[in-house]
Image 1 (cartoon, rainbow, N blue to C red):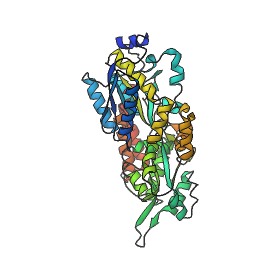
Image 2 (image 1 turned 60 degrees about the vertical axis):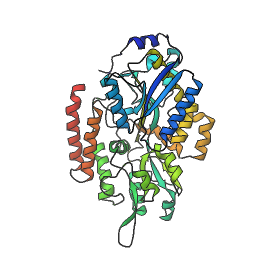
Image 3 (image 1 turned 180 degrees about the vertical axis):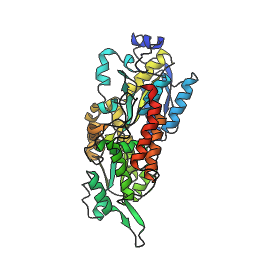
Image 4 (image 1 turned 30 degrees about the vertical axis):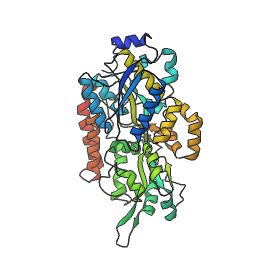
Length: 427
């Protein structure tokens, strides 16, 4: 389905080099504003800077709510013949957008002589859910991995080394017990660990699956899932045990959006969340904190996440060329470095980390290197055809295990059966 190459007249014109530089064009650019911090203000400054140096190109950045809101709006607009030229959408939306036949692969818009240097410059772990069928459908930009945020002052107060975060599952349990504090009445005043289980539960859960030895939850073609393996069931057993057996995490479903505030307010000493929260937490923390890779069991592991640039079909050659040029400019080292510093997202290319700006930043904020270095062990986020349905299936079953409605084994068996029924048509 996805291996066909749709060569419209627009695509052919660009592929032949008839539009080789940004010409006068007006673009619509959908951007998810509900991603934390001042991302909207930062992206507005970026588009303003590009327009100032590119006369004739106008970029109308349209701030569209959450990632899900943005994807829905983009698909609706495209179906109605009014697609934006560009959008930042989740990397895991790739198969849904291909299935809708509303996006174009980037490869033929990049001159052949520059293609390898440009596309090959992104970290391979980010490209695993940006490419499929031999084509590049997403350009990594607002990318992330989950990391552990550790309250160093809480560690020290508990008699733990504040510079030695838990490196294994067992260590996270043992340190979590020491970090969980109760008042005279037995009420918890500080939990040891918080792994949110709403919002993006399967994303953080993939970190446990990867560290338990499995390379993600699906194949790279988006046609099969691996939910009922021993590695996945073992990961869910461990997640449930943090509250039910070990008492180091608050019971029940823990809210994604409230997790940074819970960490900042001292409600938890360790929090799992995106590296994209780094700038927000740096700006608001009243205590010393550090970042660490997710703990290992069989191995180190974490999922990649975040958003890519997508190029939508149905625009003029001038508009598409201007959109391509802007995306390439935005991911150049100078711009990508400033974006990473301003937001906390991982600069998606190695050459960005070689700039003086990023070197200085990494010296001042060594925690920024954690997510980058974790890419060595990263696996793709769950991404399949019928992605929203498949993700809901596993999220609902993770929740059922957390609240005790199902055992982890039953939850994952049910998730596998439901997902197989949907994905059978794509095999």
